[in-house]
Length: 272
Ligand SMILES: [Fe+2]
Ligand SMILES: [Fe+2]
Image (tube, rainbow, N blue to C red; front, side, top):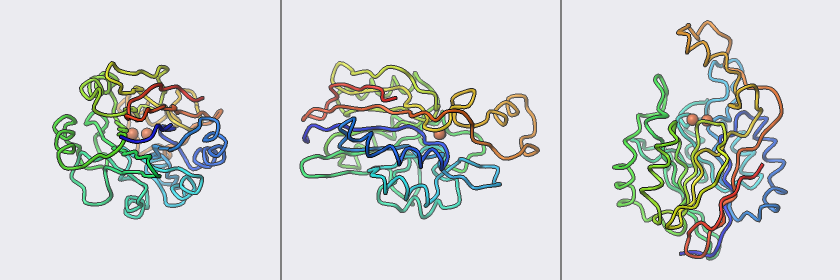
């Protein structure tokens, strides 16, 4: 299938500051982990000042910062269509947006090649993460969309799926249905990391949630939870100040995935 590889997968980077922090650490981190490829979910990188959507989507500046630091592929999710630079960001060769919806801009699948090392990155958006009022197109149901994608796309080399979804059971069910067919599946979107990395019986690696990369705040999501609490209470969030990023220490949400020459996962370990 491909040469053995190590993939460093990093979860939802929240805010430009966190992206800069990750970029600064990346050369050392890459060496420490022995990473051949770095795949980063950056759907929350846009910081658009007074916009009420602070931290949603990506900006060209932040994407450039990550790519210049050596990130090989940038994935997204329900926020791939937010932010001021959507058209430009989706046009980047290294940016992947969810594949399972009707969209002509951008790509849902990206194949990385270096010598004999070949890694295909697929981004999927679960309908569970398609929130009311979002700007993202409505995603198609995962299983039929995957069957359709598998039919349409060649998916060479090792295959890594970033499944952006709300439900832990849905991610576990989906990866179980794909055991032995893909190299690994990493969950994103809920931002709070799950502890364990799993290797399924037929060799597919799995982590339920990579976790966000950014400031922890009080709930670990990278955002001040004022809007979320107000929404829960049924209050008018337009009366609130913009979404604010969290304060507190910076945290990394990441795993290292060790793949063998056949593209199966040998180990999947959390990187703090
Ligand atoms: Fe996110
Ligand atoms: Fe998300």
